[in-house]
Structure formats: structure tokens, C-alpha cells
Image (tube, rainbow, N blue to C red; front, side, top):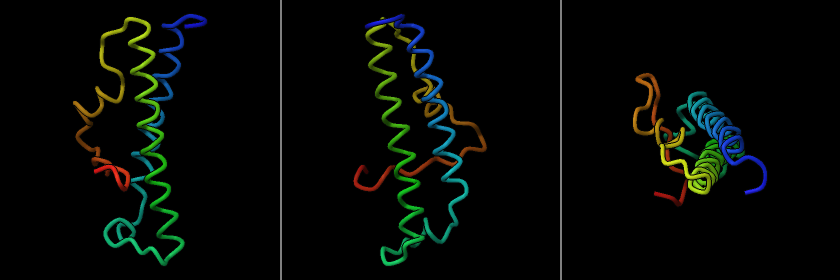
Length: 102
């Protein structure tokens, strides 16, 4: 890996944490009606769905990148995503899996 692998891991882990926080924040503010009864005919409903799905995909992408960089750098400890999902904060609502993934 070009550069300093451990420094790159640290940078990517910061983005991984930010992606988790963004996904959680977006999911937290989505009006319940758009989560409970999404309407494919309503552009606002679809925009909320896209926001939730996209922020979740960003979280997954950063976790994948982090895992690969940690492996390449010989780091065996879990990354931020694995730590978060193993011990989510008590006030955290679990974010749904993007459509088509579960």
C-alpha cells in the first residue's frame, strides 16, 4: 500500500464513523409515514427512501474499504462498524438494510 498504511486506516476509520453517524441521523429524521408506508408514486417518499438507502450504502462501502485496508495493514482488531453493530448505543435505533439486501 502506498504511503503509510496505518495512517490511511485511521483516516478511513474516521470516514467509517462519519458514515455510521450520517446514516443514523438520516434514519432518525425520516417521517414515520415514509418508513411505514412508502409510496412509489410520491416523489418525497422516494427521496426519503433514496436518502436512507444511500447513506446505508455509504456505511457499507466504508466498512468494506476499512476492512480491506485493515487486513492489508495487518490490523486484526474490529473496525468502527463492527464495534458499533456489536454494541450499539442504547438510544440508537437499528437502521434498516437497503432495499434488495435483506
